[in-house]
Structures are given as structure tokens and as C-alpha cells.
Length: 48
Image (cartoon, rainbow, N blue to C red; front, side, top):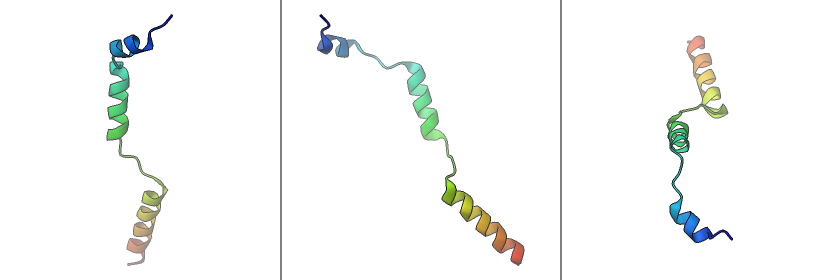
């Protein structure tokens, strides 16, 4: 039978997962509100 407590003690996260996690947190993606804000700024600048 599997000893879950013993297996958990042996567990070490995969480096690839840690690298991916950091890349996801560092990625500065735009959401729809950022895009709309930029569009509105451009429209206001064109009217001047």
C-alpha cells in the first residue's frame, strides 16, 4: 500500500513547472480594459 505521508516528504517540484510559473507571473498581458483605454487615448489624440 502507498504511504502518502512518506511520498509527500520525498516530493520535489519539477524545475520546468517552476520556470513556467515564473514566466506566467512575469508576463504582462493586456486585458480588454487596457486595450480600450489605449484606443480611447488614440481617439482623443487624433481629435486634437
